[in-house]
Length: 223
Image (cartoon, rainbow, N blue to C red; front, side, top):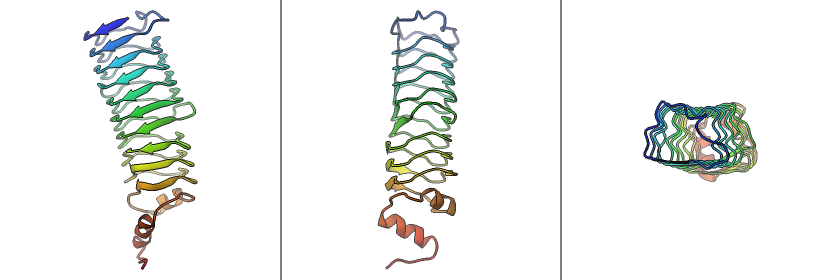
């Protein structure tokens, strides 16, 4: 089914979408729309208003989101295998319990989003703003994370083992029990090198300038 420019706000669509079809939403208003448990595998959402849209328990495997978005979307317990989000506003979105295997977030605004408690083998992040986001316990093991802002985000318990962070920012980031073993942090802004961060960065690779900044913060000058 195709929906073009339709006002579907505050409607319950979960039972109106027949399974086995590919549904396309173009420039639709889905504000507070109820898509709980909907069959949306392979669906496309193009430049849609998604303010507080309810995708809980929906099948979104292979779904494609481009542009648009809104505050406080709910993806709790949804299946999102191989889904892609490109240039979408996902501010304060909730992903607890969602299956995020091989999901990619590119150019997304994810301020205050919560991915803690999500399931799956990992996801990809690129050129996105995750300021104040909560990724507690998520795995980005061996991923190449590029152009991501993690300012004041909670990365407690995350696994960045053997990951590469390039053009990323970690200012004010919470790193309790975060793993960076063999991670390449040479292209990242590490922020203030406090004791908690230094414990988290054990085993990581950093550059000379970063090492000098860490020592300078402790009153040691390298000549």
